[in-house]
Image 1 (spheres, rainbow, N blue to C red):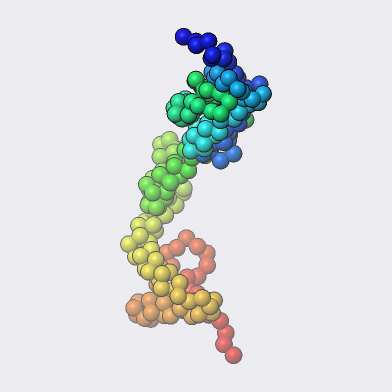
Image 2 (spheres, helix red, strand yellow; image 1 turned 180 degrees about the vertical axis):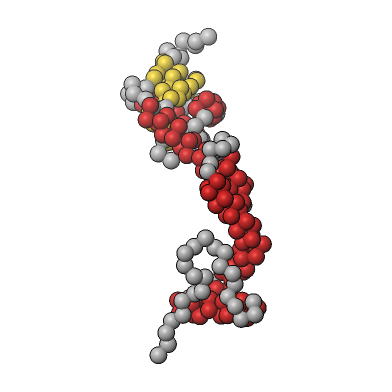
Length: 231
């Protein structure tokens, strides 16, 4: 029912989509508004712009906390915020407002790329935790990627040797070097670090009856750390 002193109801929209920054860095929603409002008896020539500005400000505030990847949920959240807007303004009465959100093609492509990157990071973390932190499993993974008989005997022998070496390192060298690395963090001087490594080697040599530890590493270089000549 419209009272005789009430002005006619207006329905306004935006000539161009308005941008709503989101919680996702570098991505904004494009918003189109449908606003139903009534001017007051003594209104202002810019009343329509004022009501659009009120609706847009509320939408910007709501969208700033939303993830751009979930467009339907974001649109619901923005429209819920618009429901709570004050109805009474100085030059108008707001009756209803609704926002329709969309994402540009560039924004959709960026979101898809970010989701792919996040999935890759999750997979790499999973592989690190469950595979690469256990080097013996890496050998099994390499074998599993080849059909039976596809590897020559020499390659298989090298993998078996690597597995034995990794197992030996896990039981002996790796715990020792981890502890030594933690201890060596207190030496900031390069020469002091070198002297510390020599002290470790001499201690292992003494435990082995005066002989260096067996050189089982698949490296061509000697395990003996080079000693600096002193004047």
